Image (cartoon, helix red, strand yellow):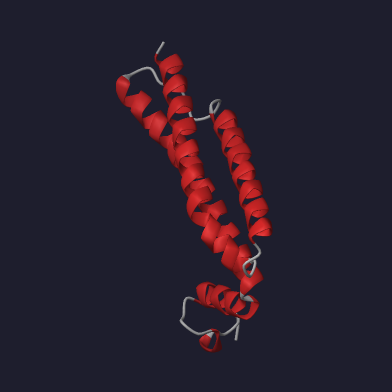
Length: 136
């Protein structure tokens, strides 16, 4: 019986957080996309709607696939552990995807800055000029 409640809570919370985050990204991403597409509002609107649809589909798929994994909950403690484990992985994966999307969109608008930023992140330094390839 605890597993049934675990699944119900997991699905309810995941759908709720999906809708709230999706609305926030859609609302606040609009200005960013208008800037990315140099003031072309119809294109920014279309991309924003496509990103939201992709976000919802991806999140629902992850939540649906995740319901099967993670073990069994037979006590209240194992219920909480399983619930937070599943929700944590979904949030981590979607957060990573969100930052990947930002990097892609950032590189569309400012290709030179995006490359320098990615190189800096990979090297762990402020400027890519200080970065030496591995083995040199």
